[in-house]
Image (cartoon, rainbow, N blue to C red; front, side, top):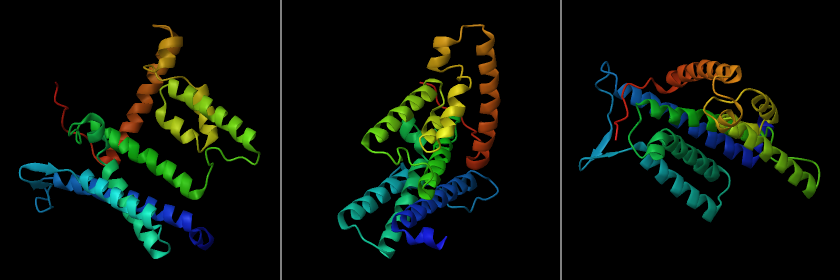
Length: 238
């Protein structure tokens, strides 16, 4: 552990990841407390001149400030640790409202709002892998040609898994290659490009894909709701 934290890059990455995780979990806890009638004393959202200031505003401001100072000044030691932690906090606050900047609507407590928790889980996994130095995307002992071949192979697997409708696994596969193998050989999601192209309507393969996707989605939603809280609103229809 000491050797791990002695490396400046990994130490900064560790603190950034810690700031990200803690800020996301805290702000999720806070928003859940806000909507709980048992705790009316919990501080509510910030309103100014009738405008609801979302916490992603503070997250973006933190990332801009710490990112600019980090690149311009390039501090070392304790100041780099502070900047990395603050940047991670900014990322956590911003990712928590990923659904808002994806849909350009306040869908925090709707079904669409689950995408924020989805992105948090993927970012946490990928960030943890990067900090631990597990499976760098194009790490190889060969020369330039070997790197290019490895890159082409990874990109081909990425495209295949993405075509099968498994975006999360496609991203993780860059860092853990066996995920590509696992996701690539299994059935595609029923609404994916691959399924529309190769699974005939009414076929057994499509039926199996639908059953498997429904089972997986039920488990995924269960865990997302445990982390972020279950939605209780519906997205306004346009």
